[in-house]
Image (tube, rainbow, N blue to C red):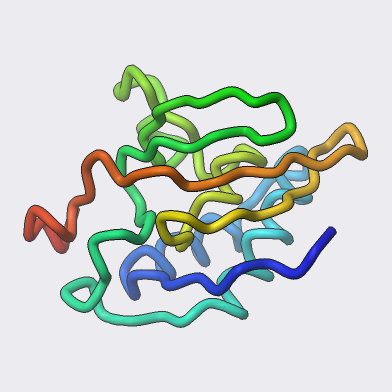
Length: 137
């Protein structure tokens, strides 16, 4: 795995993600550990300070899987909201965890459970709560 790009995380998201990590089941352990690593290396700032080109929780993101040359749009959600968001991807899914805190243009190499890696590029933030002044969603 190559060097990961810098990430920025909303303080509320970081607190909620830490609770998810702390209560992760055995099947989510790999993702939880990777997510905790990301939280520890990320810059954590107040929600009002999040730049509008950074992926935060509940952001709708257009990204490309460079490994398969496939572009997609997904909304990054907490696991309990997955069924209520049509294009949702859970932050506890390997690709979902890779997206948090990345900036438009960032490329990240991320491990998958089948001992392979995926390369993802953030192409656009279609919708972001902080940009819409929704700081406590």
